[in-house]
Amino acid sequence: MTDRARSHPTSDLRGTHVLVPRALPDDPLAAAVRAAGGVAVPTELVRFAVAQPPDLLDQALRALGEGAHAWLAVTSATTVEVLAGRAADLGTTLAALTERVQVAAVGPATAAALHTAGVHVDLVPPGESSAATLLDVWPAAEERALVLLPHSEIAAPTLASGLRERGWLVDEVVAYRTVPVREPDPAVSAALAAGRIKVILLTSGSTARALVALYGVPPARVCAIGASTAQAAAEAGLTVHAVAEAQTPAGLVAAATHLIAEKSSSR
Picture 1 (cartoon, rainbow, N blue to C red):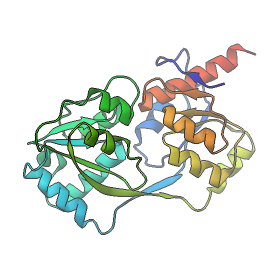
Picture 2 (picture 1 turned 45 degrees about the vertical axis):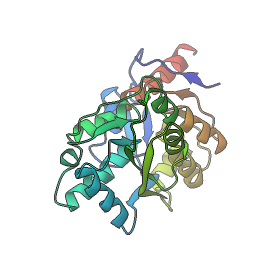
Picture 3 (picture 1 turned 180 degrees about the horizontal axis):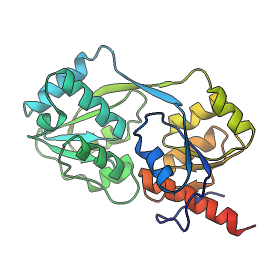
């Protein structure tokens, strides 16, 4: 059974090996695992590639900087990274391009990524990070006002459709593609097979699907960052043992910590 994990851990990870689906050395999720006493085992499950050619995205960003949009809606930290990279290639910054618009983030992790990029955030929904919760708090439509919605090529239409139903004009643009890693990491395969990795952290449906494609169904406990990720993991054949209450790196690590504490207390 999946538990909605508490935001505050009851103990640390005490040397537990935790699979982190990211490989950047400064990744905040790996840092959160280490801060909780765990051993982060980073591995790349998916890669993100800017949509090619980037002409439409660049055109949308230029229009954003010129004040053509009333809002920018951002649905992931990856989108922030892509937008910031394209802004740099255009000789500017995402902060500069958003000076004349209001910015909405789907949740706290996305908002944190925007803040790191120097972008002000005007709207973050409470509770679970999802298109539905963002739509619940989205303001009433302004006449002929345009929302820029950059997203992954596999993004669900929920937010765009919901905004249009509420009377907003939506400028959708594919910002990036999600590309699964094709070959497993031999060291990770060996660690999973030997049972050294006790917990797997999943940050999206695509990481859940890629994990199973690369490594099968591993003998480890699985923590998902949110309900949609948990659902995708279950559909991929994984048993999800905990879902983070707060959809942030700290919240996901708290779910893992609570899971380990429960296992220890049941012995």
